[in-house]
Length: 87
Ligand code: SF4
Image 1 (cartoon, rainbow, N blue to C red):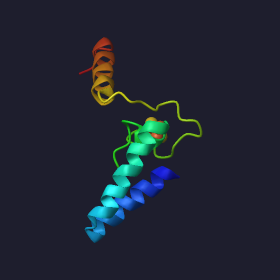
Image 2 (tube, rainbow, N blue to C red):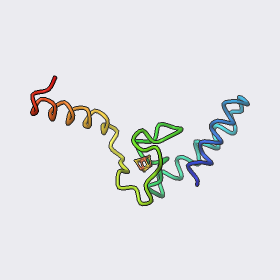
Image 3 (cartoon, protein in one colour):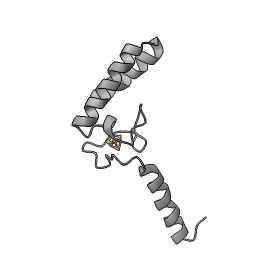
């Protein structure tokens, strides 16, 4: 719910060019990061949506604070392909 409010605030501040709304949204994000494992505090969140799920699982097991998660996934996929003799 708060993630949705954050996204709406960012969208609105961008459309209106309102820096106060933008700062409010950033404050909300900081609060969420410090208090929960919400999507907003997850490194898989791109600012508007999740990079891995179209719909958030009921109890998301994929939350991460690892900023390198995407590179690690790419490396794991590359190694898997290599092990299977693929490109
Ligand atoms: S991985 Fe889970 S917690 Fe992270 S952004 Fe996606 S749905 Fe949210």
